[in-house]
Image (cartoon, rainbow, N blue to C red):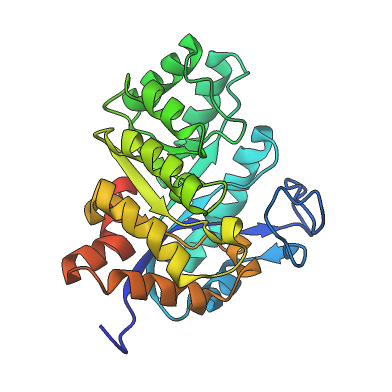
Length: 290
């Protein structure tokens, strides 16, 4: 589709406004940047108009807002702040929030029931991680299944297989593995270790893989490296269970929005038109029901 903007469901968007909302604590450039290779601080403000400019080389038709709050106690306030912004934007969207599994289960459920009053609320990520051997985690995942919630899994090499083994007990849970399984490096040895764990995760019947976040590992937008990892995910899951996502504004550290969308276009060009549409939009529509 040379010269044509592809329809794009951006499945990993962060909006924030530090001038008004003190919910975020971001790493700074330097030795304590969590290995992100930050060149400059994240912007204090990144709003809908900024995101439209970032992804202007694609035809943004729907989007998924993923929380980046530092503490789960602030996630309901973030969702309330986001709602009028999303309504003004006018595009179908979904919200991925969070919770704190150290809280009593009744309190966790009550918070999520409040969140689900917004029909755009679709699921959550556990920024504090999850103990996949815990009975409480199993109870929580069973609750998610009962409420039709999507689990955005945060795991990296060394923990992907552990997550897969725990999630195997919940075959009806829709799971989206974030950020290409969040590899910790991209040398050949690490790639092989990552690939073995990803194969285990891909065997989960209701799992999807979000092709995103590679800039955080490579510290630049690199077609050759990104394609190597993305193609392996597509081989394991199939294009109908893989989805491109921007991770903006975080990934603006590593290139422009146009740079990353050009990588997506280049990767998709090796697949059929139907598969390319799945990667850009169709899979995200199914996974997040938007």
